[in-house]
Length: 191
Image 1: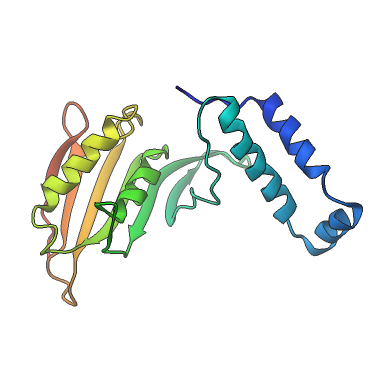
Image 2: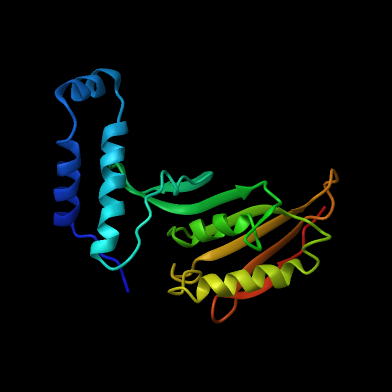
């Protein structure tokens, strides 16, 4: 079931939570530039909306902070730009619930509307013996969820995996392409 929080639902709960604060709380917030109360109120509204919608909504802080973006300014107006590149980097080699840590970065990138989405991570050459197969399996998994890998028209993906060693050798890179947009091709990395 798709979860839909309406503007009316959100503002009613948000204001209810904010009104629980005292006048001294508000004065402190205004004089110290602290926004903790408003963030807490929003988290409460999101958490409480789930049961009313027969679903679970999980509030999370700043999940969509992107490591690096490349934007193209369009004209001279404020906020008139196109997201051309979204780059995420993951250093963690560990596995969580049987999946490599970089899966969270992949998931985050699937939600962004950028022409080129880049994931740079590292692989454990002993544990990830077939890196291409591991990557393809996770790309297919993300694609099966509302076509997340291919929802940007003409969008491209680049995956760069460094070795788990002190050597610069052993990097591998892959791109997605083909008719369905999810065909994996390994790119040659020149010296």
